[in-house]
Length: 119
Length: 386
Image 1 (cartoon, chains in turn blue, yellow):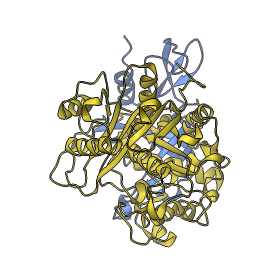
Image 2 (image 1 turned 180 degrees about the horizontal axis):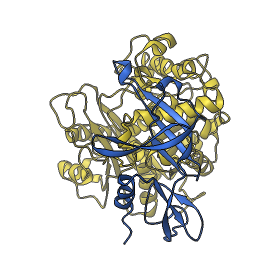
Image 3 (image 1 turned 30 degrees about the vertical axis):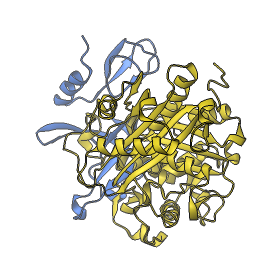
């Protein structure tokens, strides 16, 4: 029995960023679920994401201390799906739409977290 | 049923409308407020409480709010709903009530809502769970989602922060003509630009209020409406579309479900955007009316920022938009959709004093729920538009 979120987290904990793909349609799926949205195809398998992506939209959550401000971005994965994440490794004001980024798995609060860094 | 493009055009009408407790309404519960607004709307219509046989509400902190309000008022409704399409719920209720009235399932629908988060802050636990795919990145909910849509619109179409600010300034100028509006002090484009940035590109002045308020409307069939205390406001069209739940799954960040619900509602009504005398668009943030003006056909896609510039949607401008002052300057207690319908009704009855739009015959109320997730459009008209 496919356990979409639990299996995804287990992969992430082992350092793998996985997404789903339908064997019949070839469509990639994120976030993980039991069927491909739109087609309802249930023949989903886990495949490694390339990690390549492009910033599709960006906002900066501003804090009193500018050092605490952080980005919230939507990233278009090379495989197609879009997801929410954060861009690390660059000043927040340098993050822009169209920026090429790549996935990175970090630990935050003792949990693995998928973020992106400039490609 | 007598349908036109899937809707019984004009065959149901809003005959009672009210607001209650706008601004601060301390010392009472949300359902107290909804009940007060309900009784005011019934009195406005000249209809007794006992006639109500359908209750539609969206309680702010009670998932079973439909039952709660029915119990509170001592009603035994045939139809009870407390749907979960956020701020658009009330426009959806108008659609559902019109269909149930036309089918003969019900005879009198009450749509009511009350919430006082400003004076009676909600407990920490809300009615929605945090998305496991978004919450780890700590977006401000729902502000950052709208900010992401705004960033995309600015990138694609050159929309500016000044243009966003124009929406807030126009809303404030309308609020200054509305004695009931909660915030009426002067506001300039410069004030908005200099306000504290919260989630780029939106400052605190690009965000709606979070204050107290209640509202209600009463709907009956057109034949019954003729005997009510007030001139009926007929429901000419009502349509709804859901495109996603979370912003990361929005199909296109610059095109909302209003591009689906709007054309459907206009086709049902047999009118178009250019015919509208009053336009009430859910303004949770300054970007939202810009998106809806485009998606509903008031201007081409990408032109919304230029459309709202130079006071075009302010009093005396080309389009009477959000004449009560909107969620930005009048009232926004969490789910604002019902206030859009009340203001549209008041305008079509000619009750709006200083802010009255002359000879208003057709009005549009467009509700938004979630993070641009649920869009519902209602077209209303005076009896002469039937």
